Image (cartoon, rainbow, N blue to C red; front, side, top):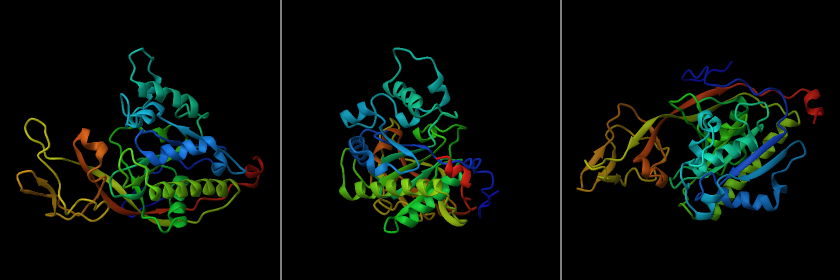
Length: 329
């Protein structure tokens, strides 16, 4: 069906059924201190006209209101790791963490996950403290529709440093909020400190969301999109901070690596500066591309950065909807 230069055949999910998207949801505040999505969704809750298009309805949702109220990433449990079938389908108890309860509420609101009743598309808005620009995050399996959406966002926003990141899960099921809908995409924009709103990042995210709504409208109205080749970054593994025997940090990101997200990292390059002054060098046997360098939210995981490889994939054309499908609107 589709071939990439590194043998990605089979990484695509089944193509989206050739039907218009009628119900779209835009979520912000999945992490309560990532402020661009928080303030955009709060604005759209007051005035949603910017999201609406003739062929579909778009619903803004503040995903984690309690975390937003306290301006923290989460209250008890990372909400963006709570959307597994095990959590969503388990029996509720009085001791459930807040985010587990909220995940079930969101699943009922925009799902249920993996059901015919789920929303057609979910766009989840995030910020990172890392110097990643505008990052479009896909799961390990994704639809041709979503790839065309990413391509359209890049074309319509040429002034943005816009990359596509394929996050490969070691597990079989996605944990993220965007997996509740039939198709989804995460926007990750930075650098922006936690709990801070930057006008430039806010405006960039707003432009990307508006472009995404435009693309869905074009698709619904019967526009065909040609095949293309696209570079994406595919997860390899994670690199943890150096730790002391008692689990404390033994060093930090090396100045030569700081802010170099998506730049080539070659074997022998310094990656950490230990507190005793020594440099730790990258010992890999090939060049990689780091992401989420020194991300503040990942200190609790001791995660210093993620390694990825840059590949080119060939994406087949997205055919136009039939006239009968468009008329059904």
